[in-house]
Amino acid sequence: MRFLLLGPSVFLFEYITSLQSALLPLRKKNARDRLIAWASQQPTWAIGFLDEVWWSRFALPRMHAWQDPDHPVRLVEQSWKKGDPDPKALACYGVLWQEGTPDEPQRDQMWLRFVTGRPVSALTTQFLDWCCECLLKQGKTNWLLIWDNASWHKSQAVRTWIREHNQQVKQTGKGVRILPFLLPTQSPWLNRIEPKWVHGKRNVVEHDGVLTAQQLAERICAYFGCSYEPHLSIPEKVA
Image 1 (cartoon, rainbow, N blue to C red):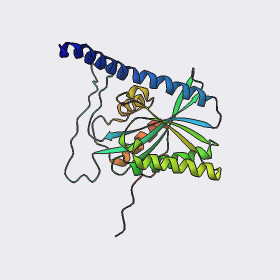
Image 2: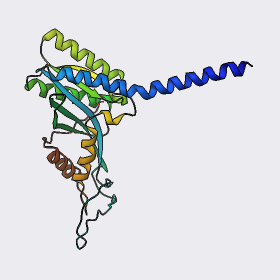
Image 3: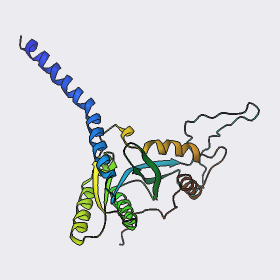
Image 4: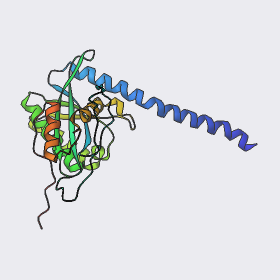
């Protein structure tokens, strides 16, 4: 009898919980859109979607293309060879800037910084600092930062850095304050930079050869129309 009484309650609780989880991305999207609409009306605010991606020198992206029957387009899969001094893939931070009105947004400008190794908190703060310096030169004073829940975004080190950075900006009256907005988990479609990565990989692929790491990075920057900056890295500890 007790099971019969608890059964419907447990089912109802699980149903409500699953419904709330399904609605969370929608609520987050609405909150994101309200923030973007407000920031779009502030001339000293910048709106940037930040993310990281790996660029493989060997893996081939999924792509379709019209082709002439007499001149078919084929992607030749390459493999790593012993003695190749370059890494198999490059990781980079990127931010897509949004300008214009919420109804007619313009998302044409990308900033990229490749990294030595993989994305970690220490490199995240370096990239944030570099972006703030560039924004300051453009006359911006605030940055609405939209990104996902990656561990190197919401780590204690990154949250502490952002808090101390904002405190310093407030005390000195100089710099760019960061307002981070975390997107819900498993909702990549809410980050406007994601499609840029997909199209970028299709456009920089080498059809029948292997690019060096520098050639790949230069081709990526050329495609996105941004400058090729020195790679971000973590300084080695001096013994």
